[in-house]
Image 1 (cartoon, rainbow, N blue to C red):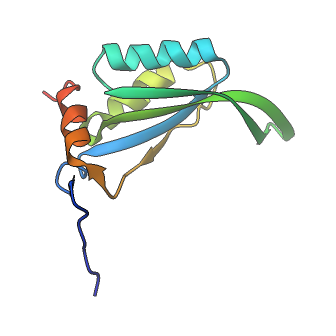
Image 2 (cartoon, helix red, strand yellow):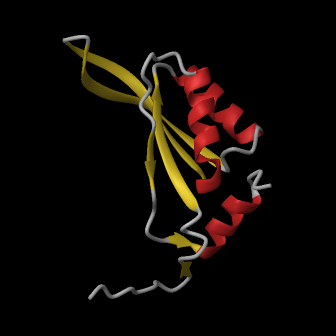
Amino acid sequence: MVQVRFLPGVQSKMSDNNIIILTNTPTQKAGEKLAENLVKSKLAACVNVLPKGHSVYRWQNKIIKESENLLIIKAAKSLEKKIYKKIQELHSYEVPEIITINPNNIDAKYAKWINESLNLE
């Protein structure tokens, strides 16, 4: 039997609504442009742009090593498809990384702020 425990100050109902989406961009400027677009359009409450990560991956049967910028996008589950579409529309990569993470716990005040910052109509 699975036992559910709640941490003080953490709630579960709103955390079911909140997601984190990861993507990366080839330049800091591209990451900042995408982040600003998502926040201005109220698709994301906050986007962290972490610079100069190093990626190693296979593309068209070649091993590629590049610097990339990781974007951590905080949003609502109901906006996930719109965010994916916006990333695909604005991204320079043919196949951008777009991964959704569903958090187990979110601080109640932070979850409230995320939801108040978004266009959840």
